[in-house]
Amino acid sequence: MLKTTIAEHLLGIYNEHSDKPYVGIFSFDKPSLLIRDLELVKNHLEKDFQKFMDRIFSFENKFYPICNSLLALKGQFWRHLRTKLASVFTSRKTNMMFYLVDTSGKEPAECLQRAC
Image 1 (cartoon, helix red, strand yellow):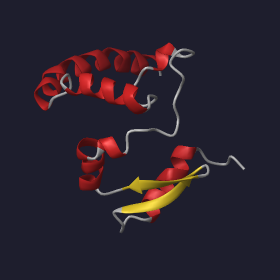
Image 2 (cartoon, rainbow, N blue to C red):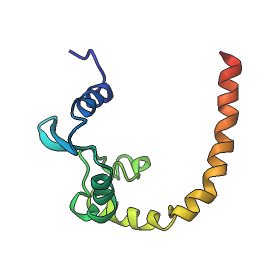
Image 3 (cartoon, helix red, strand yellow):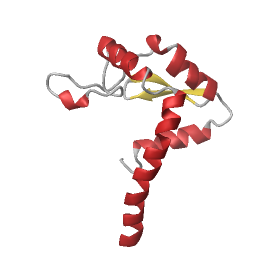
Image 4 (cartoon, rainbow, N blue to C red):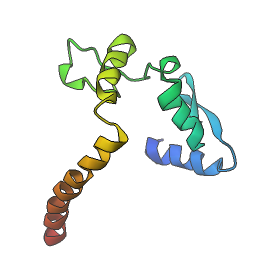
């Protein structure tokens, strides 16, 4: 009945099963896992990524070239881009970039505060 958003619905399931490391759900007609345990998430994203590389939603590159992101790609395209980006986002490099993110976020936040 569209009384809540998908995010609110997933948050409800997440909170309802706080005692479990993961819970099975359906994403439309496909079975999925909602993983709560940090170690399982880490294993899924770092060590076992080759087994879980395809996403439910994807876009055809030739029709939507702007959608070349890790969240939208599948198969070999995803693997290739992930390999390229992995060397960019090491812990050291991410820590070095943090000040840029912090300073570039302050100006819009100050503008919003002045506007409200």
